[in-house]
Each structure stands twice: as structure tokens, then as C-alpha cells.
Length: 171
Image (cartoon, rainbow, N blue to C red; front, side):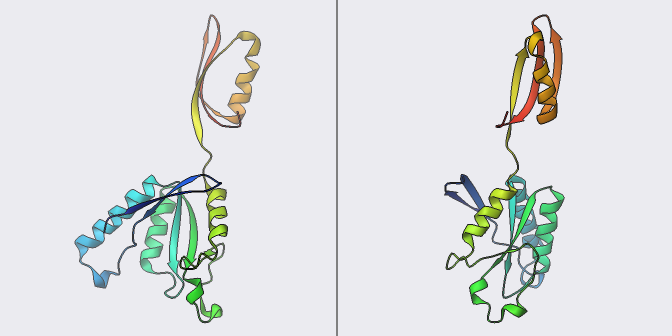
């Protein structure tokens, strides 16, 4: 199936979850379907700020899980390992032990606050472009921009210093 977009909003912000429905085991699909599911996952990763790698607590980490995690990592995306169906684990000692993983039960809502916090902690800082014309008496502000932001261009003009930069909302 196609990826499904699900919008969610809370006090932290607005989120878009992209459910790719995972990739199937090779024995259950032909090569054409597997290629499509890998392409679908790659497109979802590209659209993402943070990738949630969902592990079924009863199955453990599969080859497909490691493939998706590798794709997300190679794309430079933040990844959170999420162990779902934790409520169905009969013996927690036998369940997957993944350092830093967030354990949840999507069915019962257990662990969701911790997951949302992990997502917030891993969101990249949002920046936006600014164009400034600083009078010569204020060009010291350019030094702050160089330290705190990403200056993309500087040009001295008769009125002062014209600066283009990417800055976060703190500036």
C-alpha cells in the first residue's frame, strides 16, 4: 500500500507521521514489490525530520528494520528506535534490548508521552533566511550572526554592511 500521512497536533507542535507500512520479508514478495517498498521508504525518509524505526517487540529487529534504519542514517536524519507492542511481551527478559529505544504500546497508549518527548528532543533546529542592512555603527552585530547563524553572504555598500544569513528563532 501507499504511505499514509497522519497529522497530529499537541502542545509541542504540529506533526506529520508518515506510515510506510514497513517492508515485507523477501520470501513474501517479488523483487518488483520489494523495490517499490524500498523506494516508498526512501521518499518518506526524505520528507522526514525525525525517523521512527518501529520494531515489533515480539519479532525483534528484522533485516528490513536494519535496512530502513540504515537508509535514515545515511540520509542524515535523526532516528528513534521504537519498540511497539510492549504490552504483548510475555517475558520482558526475552524482549529486544535496544539501548535508547522507546518502548510503547500503540494499542493502549503506553509510552507515548516518552516518545513525543524523544521526538521533540531530536527535532532539528528550524532556521529561516534573513537579509539585513546594518549601518556601519552596528556592524558588530555581523560578528554575532557569524557566531550564532550561518552567514551566506556579506557585502559592504555605501549605507553599511548587507548580510544574508540563516538564523534560528533565538536571533
